[in-house]
Length: 487
Image (cartoon, rainbow, N blue to C red; front, side, top):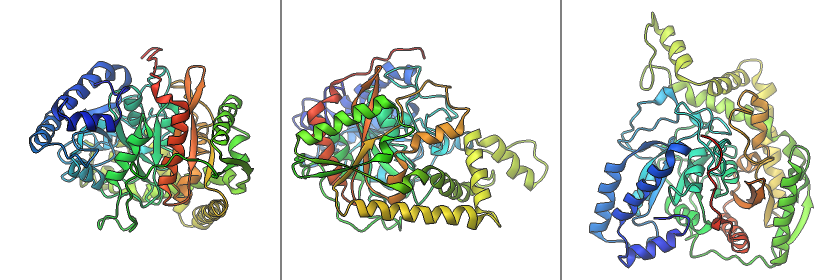
């Protein structure tokens, strides 16, 4: 099955009309993966036997005509728990960890008849912007194999861009769905915080983490998001809000819509060519009848340091459980309990995880908590208030998804500050909890550029509306990556 040519709606029609079976669709998916993944390294674990059993069960029961996800293959980022299938978070620490239950999002997909085909590569514990911190090796960008796919959901974005799968789940803490979506020329959405249960998602930063969806087409992500959304009694941060049918309700009419473009998103640190591509994209919205105005979000300049203090502090707390005692990697040749802790964590975690844990532990320590963590929390509140005020007058905030296109593998991995700045445009939406997406807006020197669309909290439907309007105008999904460069 060529996923460049078929949407989930089209696949659903083929399944309902019995022109193809779920089993054939899953077998074809594994053929796609086998043909390309040696170059991409998007997958850590495949579960072919279990997936084919699940597909056969769907075929025997019959395709649910009212459910778009029935019989559709999907791939899962490897920090989302899956029963009986290794979930590693791309870390040596969890190299052989096999969960005994599914994350709520996986459970919901299975209830709707979707078939998970494997676990996707990522930055270790979702800490990184290039998928170079994975214990299982770099992920490569299908547009140019010498370049990074972004992170931390690099495997999710690359698998979709390479045509291995029609849609994939990722997670987004500071831009980890939208940045790789931009780098790989696919659509990626981080829904409103609380829209989706985080139960069974390995925590990095609990107040920022959110499961998201990556796909070639906007409606494909809308179908997946409809399936996985909803309140969950096991997750107190999941919101008791109605889940609309994002596909049926989609309305790409942009007449009368007001778009705010923060000058901070189009200024220092953002590549001039990217700014030109985004200006052209905004002109498309004006042609559709939308109004585009420049605004200012003055506190956004503090978003990156604020984010890294808060996220690293929460990571320091969340990752305490990986201590070599209960589960995960345990160092050998230890002499006492302290040795178990120190050696297990020293050998089990990679450099980027250690860096963030040290930063977070420092920010939470006695004498520094007020100076760093408390101050960062106050700045976050200012960013939330600032964005809420914009949405009193405007329907959308738009701008670039990333300050550059995908860079070469190895170019920035030793410069953490430069790497952190890759998330400067995406972090504000995580800070405020707002729904945000990246959609392909054009190309620079053969590499994709993403347009970021942010809407008010729980207006996820509005993000899909604007994204579909733009997709219909550009039809970027018709482009296929060149797979050039060296692996």
